[in-house]
Image (tube, rainbow, N blue to C red; front, side):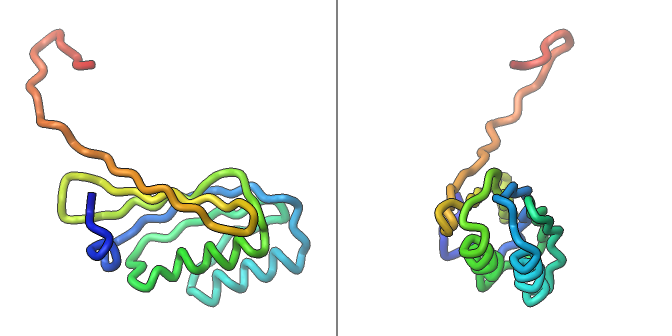
Length: 125
């Protein structure tokens, strides 16, 4: 896994769909404004948020934005997945969910195993 101190200046791909409790028009507008303040156009309805961002997140402004959104929506079904692009063949991920007005993060990694030749008729497991 990429050490935490090396995660800050890597490209990150955030993607996710959150289903929320019914939001008021004012809450929808506030979430849209929070996104625009960070240069993002969020697709927000009275019951969902579609979230996409690809780029550097050096100051973790996306995570801070999710924290501000969490205080408004309080809870949501679904998650935001972040793929972290590093210099190795191993992929690192962060998964974010919103519950009780807070953001929770789960770290994960995908490790590539050694390559193997597949002979004719052998399709691997």
